[in-house]
Length: 73
Image 1 (cartoon, rainbow, N blue to C red):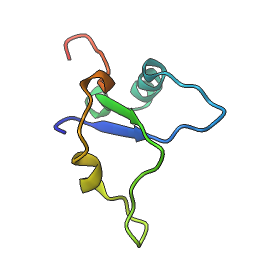
Image 2: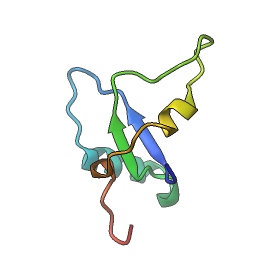
Image 3: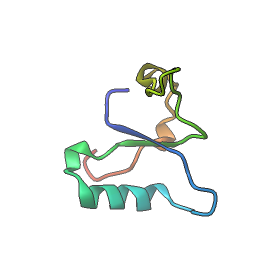
Image 4: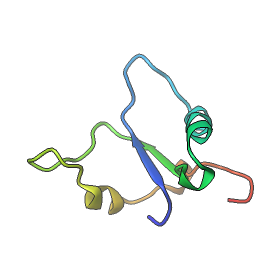
């Protein structure tokens, strides 16, 4: 994965679209920091100490349909 990514654990009672999430994030952070790839997951992989296993997330096969559409991107 060569671009900023977000792995989201959805709350059971909240429905959020990729476009809504992208709009909310872009309102808070600089455009180059906003994730271009958003994937909904059931859990974030962690080691025994509770640290996020970033290598497991980056090695996941990426589905290009999960990319956020933007003008010029």
